Image (cartoon, rainbow, N blue to C red; front, side):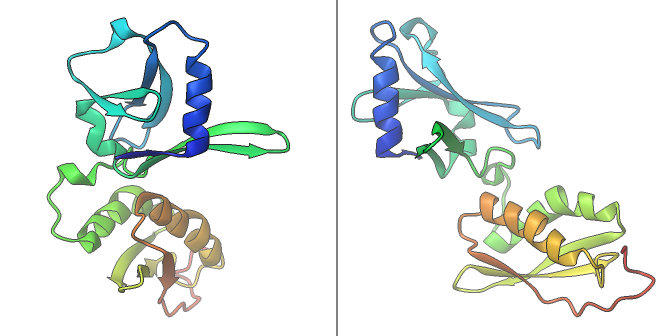
Length: 192
């Protein structure tokens, strides 16, 4: 469910060694399933464990998660990034903002089309544009097509990479790349 790297587990073990006995780790999400969702990690003293918590066992500690947010933590990963400036704990939870497991979709394509309509198209519609999924191949390459003000827009490369591809890759681990198959024709319909 939640993958915690070896470095992050060692980091948690070190932090917990300075806390009162029986203190563990809690993972939580504020506003799960919304665009404002924020994930966090905190200490969990024994007296703060709740009946609705699920206990996840790791080598030297437990992680507690409220069972109502477990589906939002699907494919979540915690890692400790160390560089010359120091270290940083990262928590990636691709389904924190959109819990597709609670909606009934028969395919990945339907999930992505729903995601585009909920997360991407509202931004694009401010410029009179939109994007739709055409297909997903067996290699995880999603083919999309822009229309409206996005067709022929001089900013389409940036929109593709910085908005559409970045969000799809972070929200759907199954997707490896996004390709635009729009036949861009510049004209009065283009935003820029």
